[in-house]
Length: 277
Image 1 (cartoon, rainbow, N blue to C red):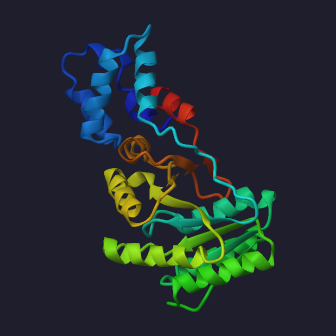
Image 2 (image 1 turned 135 degrees about the vertical axis):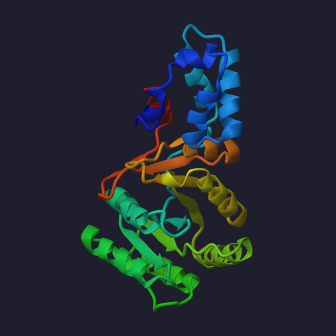
Image 3 (image 1 turned 180 degrees about the horizontal axis):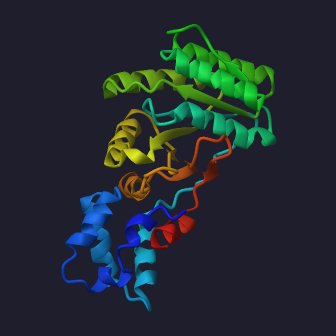
């Protein structure tokens, strides 16, 4: 990935172990979106690791701060239902389309345009559905998102679909509203079929704000995994480590561009190696 190559090119790994004044190193780590507390912790832990090389010591410390939970999509027998949540502007709707593209070879996919408060989001998902060749279930503007989700899960049953991906509204007025809305959608779905996953979409360019978003959504609904988007731009990607360290929620997929195929499963070993490249 080379996510941290921008700042690691300025820092010799040995400096982390031996440089008396670590202010510059800390500043770079913080600028890479790890946050001050985690940056300090990583440097101090690296000092204490006995290893043949500083690179090995830092690698082991960085990896120890990643979640050990499964990163594969939890696929159930019959229908696998996945709620996609996140604030507006993170690339959530496009991510739903990317998931459909990725998993359509494994069975019929249905998409639910439950972000009913944004007509543009519904239209965008419908356009993606036509391009990919998957059915999109939608309702009228400002209709009840839970109603759309229910119609979609019934349609998925009619088609004997393998996957249902539900695009939810990205409004974040307050925790209570968010909790009520997402909770209602989930309850309606589970009258028919269990929710396999709740995946939170985080924009990698938002920095530490991404961690705050993750905390809010984790309180509102049982988030089982994270999809990190927009790693193709100026994003340094440190928010991935910060979220996993703070919440123990595994990042499952990453979006690296605008193309429908710019999407991959998150590889923790490759990610950490990228930090050191």
